[in-house]
Structure formats: structure tokens, C-alpha cells
Image (cartoon, rainbow, N blue to C red; front, side, top):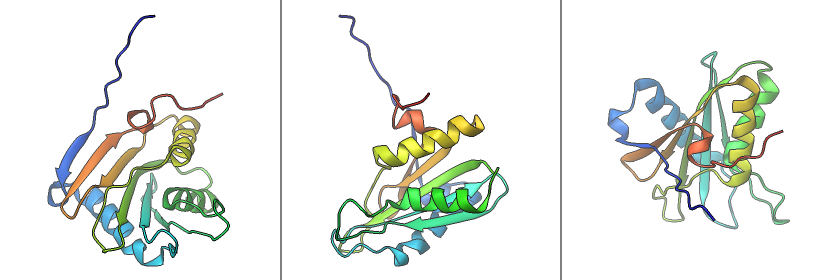
Length: 155
């Protein structure tokens, strides 16, 4: 068997150093934390998606007592965007999370959310900038889904 290595490239930045457009997207996601419905986990997650038209769609996690009937923040935002903008490309997505102490906590998109993002990339033949807030002052930036999920499902 031949051994291979996988390398993940990403950037790390302070929120203050972000491009204005990325900082605004992150703030939209932070503002959406208040509509998270997370009484079971007490872990609030929110997301904001910027389309190539400049329009931003937001979403927050929605839990349900009949687990796994809830939905992640990223898919809420992406499906909302898809329902309201037929041919617009997703340019970037920001993801933020707060724990039960209301402190920012890193939370990367799960496999299901990454698969949905991957399909957006395949559909529009473009990579999506993924911005993940990792604490009160820092973010990580990934260029495309393959940075977080290198073996996505595609037909």
C-alpha cells in the first residue's frame, strides 16, 4: 500500500484584519445567533451566506426534540438562499457559534453541511470562501469545501 499525505491550507486572521465585506458577513452571522433554537444542546450556531449579487441570507441552528429532525445553521442559510435566488452563486459563508456561557466557540460545518456547500460549488463551478469564527477575536478562512472535506460525494 502506498502512503499518501493530505494537507489542509487555511488562513488565520483577527476579525479586525478581515476585509470589510468578510467582517460584515461575520457580523450578520453573529446577529443571527439570537434566533437559534437550541434548548437541548445550549450551543447556538449561526451562519450568513453572501451571494454573487451581494445579497446576504442568514440562518441559525434549529433543534427539535425528535432528534435528528433539527437543522444546522449553514443549511438553513443555504436552503433559504436557494429558495430566494434561483441562479445566484454563493461567494462566501460565515459560521459562528456560542456555547452555554455565551462565549464564542469554533464550530466547523458538519459533513452534511459541507456536502451541501460542495454541491453549490459543483453547480456553479466556483469555490466558496468559508469563514469560521474560532474565538472572540480570531477567524479561520478556508478557500473552498475541499479544504474541510477533501473527499466529497459527487456524480
